[in-house]
Amino acid sequence: MDSLLEIDWKAIFVPQNSLIEPILRGTIMYLGILAMLRLVLRRQVGGIGTADVLVIVLIAEVAGNSIAPAEQSVGEGLLLVATILFWSYLMEWLQFRFPGFQRLMRDPKLKLIDNGRMLRRNMRREFVTSQELMAQVREKGLEDCSRVKSAYLEADGSISIIEREH
Image (cartoon, rainbow, N blue to C red; front, side, top):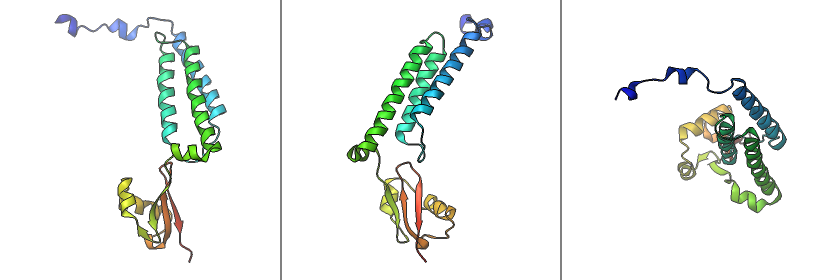
């Protein structure tokens, strides 16, 4: 029972390995990932999509394992990050090159307002409340839906609003 309450303060505060190694590992991983992201993810058209979140989570996992000395080498980590970015780039290229593949990979836009009328069925399908939609309408400088020709929930999760002609 006493061993459960004992805390090894030395293990918590005194490093077991060289202090320069984690600094070097972190620096190499940061600069390597930054260089790869600059090469592969050059453009940012909309917001963040599902594939972008997947890439971020996977890179965080791989990079974290490469920064800790006991896990894997920095070279292995950079190779894994490069592999993840390769697949991300390939998916983007396939979507650009083949429209059918794009339809498979991305959600189409969904109409939320049609000629000033909220489309409640579509709103329910994507869990968009009328308060959230009205907040977007007001951000566009409009007081109510009657001045909206159409509003769409875009593939990136943003809401685009098209004002009626006067």
